[in-house]
Image 1 (cartoon, rainbow, N blue to C red):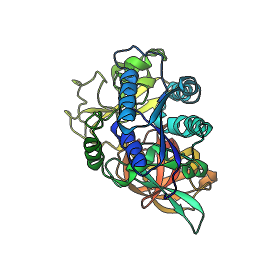
Image 2 (spheres, rainbow, N blue to C red; image 1 turned 135 degrees about the vertical axis):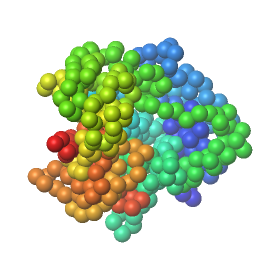
Image 3 (tube, rainbow, N blue to C red; image 1 turned 180 degrees about the horizontal axis):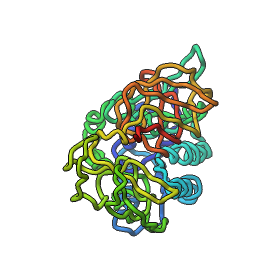
Image 4 (cartoon, rainbow, N blue to C red; image 1 turned 180 degrees about the vertical axis):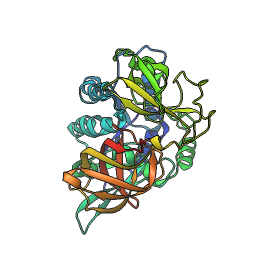
Length: 373
């Protein structure tokens, strides 16, 4: 962009959004910072970092020399993201609220607010890139240059309209360079630790948080041999592939042959909502944990239309290596078949499709095929 523009940047208090604002300011644009508050139910909780994050964002804005505005989207977040989050958990699935937050808050409520301020574009600190493809006239979502930090998975539900109005300045550089630029510029959060976990839960114990909103419904924990080996607290509190927090670490399954021996760790493999049973297996490579196929619904495609059937790559969870797959459309549903079975494919998570470095979009996993013999 050679023309000076008014760009509203989402400043989270972290180094990535800070350097995004810094780069745009250095390019000569008029930059305005917005700090989004999306959660306030336990604002004085020991795990809540909102206040410190705003202090850090304001300090960054002061160093860069830009204005910053504090905007409360907590009501929108509760209605558009958290309500769906609870519905999915209560149905026994494992949702990804960060994906919904991007689609509904950061690139909808925030975008609308930014344009009410007269913005030409918005910018965030995501590790991804936008490319305009002149032959098609479409905007493409590309992976970030730093593959270890790529966040296109979380952005796969963005539309053409949203992408056309969005910049990802740090998507073009490596994380180590981001920290170096912050250090050189004297940004106070140059060495701040990256945030982890779900955006509104932060570092707090997940089950403890969920207990506030979902009642416990204990039931049996069964091995793949059908033996009751423990009691779970409620199926909503567990996810496929989970190893920690099962309370059955010392129990051995005699004659365990598939995926590990008698001393192999236990993993959650199935959740039977009808009988309120949690099924577990021993060994990371147990057949019950491996899926050669999945179906996904609630589809969203960046180009506005679904890709044709054929060979692509997919991620069934964040930080997973791209997996080769074949896309087909039986009965208008998205089906992905994998030559190499995928581990712990989880209903409620997103299956995101890629053509090389281009993120095409994806959908919410509704079911996966397992070897349950």
